Length: 277
Image (cartoon, rainbow, N blue to C red; front, side):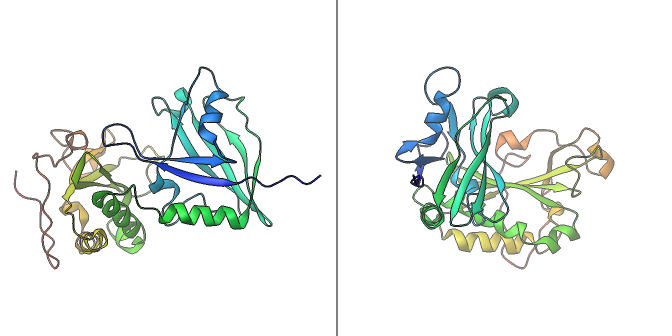
């Protein structure tokens, strides 16, 4: 008896700004996988919130199947702390003419189980590409943030020169005129006891072509030392050993620079110092 392959659909849910985040909901055989997985846990109703399309469906999104199996975070839950409220992970791998989802786990529920899913590779990859090309959920600042982060992560020479690594570039639909950028300095210290700093800045975004804005920002940022045009936004308690003063306030939660203003971006060819306090 031959078992029919599973059929994958990817639904992008985009509620109004302020009413929830954008999420990708896997639909398998016409059923919402996250809703079905939620009902396997305690309580009633949906528990898992799907990961966003920027993570799952980006240029090198993890849903693409490769010969080497890799784990994908499909959803989070509750407070966001995985060991407390949980998250849904699956291992995605290629097996001949099929893509297999197996090895399910939830860090907060050690006995969590879901059956293996097996998709025809052609249908699976076509759906991942279709969903990745669907930009109906995007807004200009969000697209600029995604393109800028992808571009900066590919500039390994520039990052290495200034001992920095990209931590995140993000935007909020409730702040459509700005994006936020955070670099970590020095590199490769996230899992060590050595001091490190976060350098951040908030940059203005317009309704102009997102790709052009991302290219302009990437060229401006990579023209010199990014630490001279950013501010210290955080880091370890002993980070002042690196020679930078601790910030008087927390710009990450202010959504602005430490002076309460969005940083202007000079024309190309300049690499200005931060304005005087």
